[in-house]
Length: 465
Image (tube, rainbow, N blue to C red; front, side):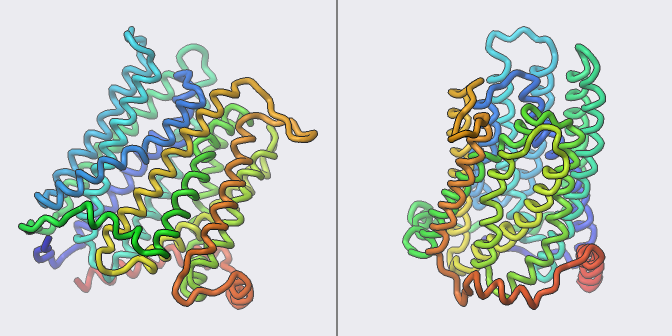
């Protein structure tokens, strides 16, 4: 496709995109994470269903393939993104109605609500691929990194505020007998839909670059196999598949572990999520420096080893402990920032410029397959071990703790496969450690100064355009 001329003044579009992102992220925060797991427990869902909930966003990526073809053929990215996003948000009204109100259904309530949630994720998946294509053409390449960095930062801040406010509200309401939890989830989901609709108002104000459709239709089947024909990228895809499986084998069950086994309040879980987000924001500049200085593979290996042992550490946490959970979230947020940043940089570095879109698509597909199958498998395991304690030597532990231990082992195995992935001009982990001695750590002031810097730079670039 050929992109037509862009508007010279991008400032209104970029501002509206930022406002859209803030309210859209608040919608996503209130319909996911701790609130979605709490809602699942309220409906009486078992571990397998909760695992299925965690897999749904990745199962829904199958809708991106026909959507990509549709927007490539018609060029109507804004229309597809807008209406799909509207469908995803409005779907939470019937979810709320059938999940909360005493309606007599001829089928079991949890599976019916799961179906509606999957439809919402399907709309999100369709909207996302359309929006990403639209925004990649709208935002000038010279400020793209800084713009999305600032946008993501504001999204994260809005999500943290929503977590704290509504987490505290749910704690307060669920303490009331009979109707407290129902009222709490009703307020949360109705607020989420309101934020989602508000984001659509700003999304609709963003202009769309003109697109001219191409008359030639390439063979998608042949191009999709290109990533597997390159040995190094094929090794990377195998690592991504197993790594995603190992991470999401445990990831959807952490909130369940917090709420049910460790008996944390919703407010405290919100505090933990806030600590993790702050650590991510502050650590990102440091990982950016490391990525520039020593390439990405060694950084991923170091951060990956820490991420591999985190589930094992969580398995050792006991109810009533407050300090260790906060420390684990701070450590996890800081090192996962390195994995996410350096992983994206490595992906772009080892994928060829020609036909890169197909390499990126296959990366997403393989990661999605691993992330979707992981929680389903662990959910099946958990559902077969209901109310059964496990024993290892003299240690007695719950099934969820066993899932965390398996996740750690699988992550370590994934990192062994990652050693065979090659990066141009890569350095060893030992060289990374020596180079790190010359990189000064960020203090709080430096970290927040760096985070605020993009606001100034983007403003300058917008005025120039």
